[in-house]
Length: 162
Image (cartoon, rainbow, N blue to C red):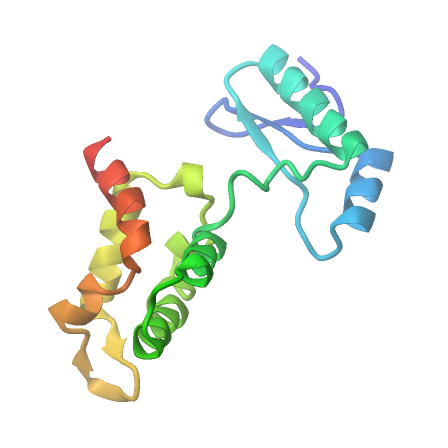
């Protein structure tokens, strides 16, 4: 069976819809430096429908990834939106974002992609991560607990209880 342009099937039998041809060119012009959006589908029919939605989003000027940011972007937004925050707390949050989230895979995942396994892998990686500026010590429990600002604990809780 031959899939239409812009629809791929991976080794697990999952279909992926993306933009092709002039639509892909338009996407790159509207969002330079960003990768093409992809949507996961269970069937070819669903993948074709998702591809049409991506094309409709492009034509109407709506960013299809706006409602599903990466964890790094989402945490940065949460920090920026906090109104009553001490300067030292904001600095600590930004350091946690830069040192304990951005370098790890979880930081590149989209918000709706995060599952229990990824959170557990990330916490395991933090347990063995060296302290910034001290290669002899690993992160302490306090640093790991504070790796995400309070606003992000809902995300972790959701993935652990799912």
